[in-house]
Image (cartoon, rainbow, N blue to C red; front, top):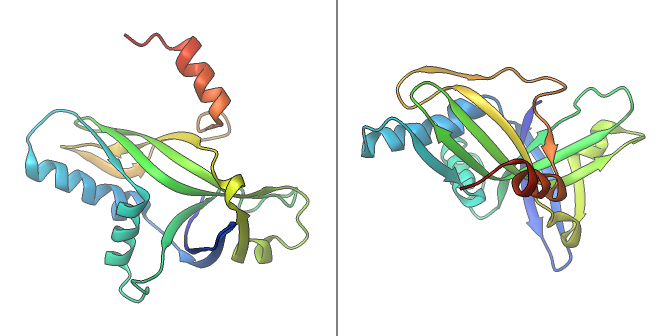
Amino acid sequence: MPFYIYERDENESQFIFERKMLFEALPRKIIQPKLDEINKISDIEEYKWSLSVDEIQQLILSIYDTLKTDKKYVIVIDLKPNNSKKAVSLFQIENIFGYSYEDWTPLCLELRTVHDMIDVPNLEKQKLHIEVKKSDFQKRIYEFLYIRKGLKSGTLNWGMTGSVNAPLLWPEVLKYFLNECIEIS
């Protein structure tokens, strides 16, 4: 599941995504600075936090000084990088929500669909330049992951993921789980 930095431009009706570069080490470059910030302000056992798309952009600009500061940059996940069914499945990270314990951090990624199609003739070409109607970009989709690092210890490695334990949850599925399956008091 590679991550990429895309430049995102917009006009009245659509967003235009241009792939700029591979973005390696998301936990180290995006999540570790947040954990460091939390540790500077408090010596606590657990902490709820979030990163907005604008905060993510600021981190990207601080990492890559060659990017233009007057442009919008976002992180896009390629969920099917080597798919044999010629599928393109790209999702922008809109927000990251974390709940950090001493030695691990569960994450909820709020995503937006950039491109999700099958039987695409030229996979790589389709991933370089994408135009998305704004109306198609509004639906929030969620993915749950974790890193093996928390506020006090651990490593910046992703937890085990596979075909059954890192699902994307579209709004109707998440709503069902929250309303029917989880008793919130």
